[in-house]
Image (cartoon, rainbow, N blue to C red; front, side, top):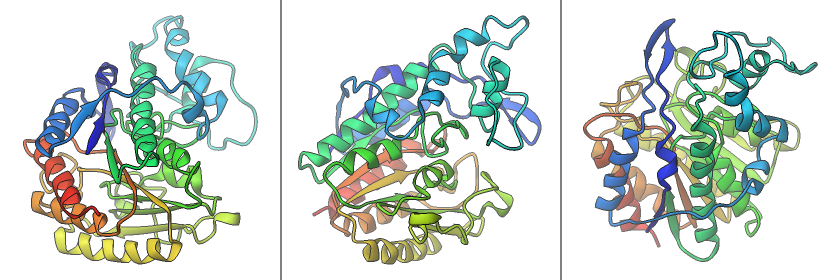
Length: 342
């Protein structure tokens, strides 16, 4: 299987975020790349650099207002007397249906959902190359490959059309799905990250051509809190095209695989022509976030089960944070997937 990654993705290096009101080291560290690269290579992947795809693939799923913000906000922020070294919002609107602030501070609050997305001088380029890795993987699958892996870092599934959140700036899974739609009448996105893919859900919530399915820790007491509940089914033309499967905290392999079968039933009913797998390895029992309890062999079984669907698949890296087994978990998933892919 081909894997896509560009070294520019490693330059984004956020320093801190707030967790329960306390400043903590940001867990979305560049070192994740080294662990994931090692895992992909151990699974037999060949690592290739994506090409520069320009703004077309990202502007297909994000607003021009938001992309302009991401590209220029750091430079503007530095002109503020006493501003922090990274762009971090300190005010958020309670509604986003009216005026648009002119100030950098106001726009930061408008376009960033939480404190987990500090923006530095390297963030824009890192996020672009991450998205271009997803774009390259999608084009590889469109060209006939049964599957391709995009080592996307920073991740993307918490990014809405015009809002960053949860370490995510550009929604890489949405970028891949939109590219697949050029050839595929229907595309399904299966998100197996620990956290609900709220940004992905938001981007496609009113669309019937992309089915979004997410397995994740129940958000009633877990990030992202306000999205990911079972009654969120889509709206307008997209009603019935969003399917959430929240799992009790600490659910392990058996419960996860059982929910995955329910997800497959819905995907089968949609009859997609292609699949995007939003791969979060943070469902692991030893991940620092500690929400679910999937084992390393469990990731292999998840990969096998998805591959058995026989769909052309773009595997997009989402979460999975620094722990000894991070690379092994990716190897397990990709090896399981490769052993069953048809």
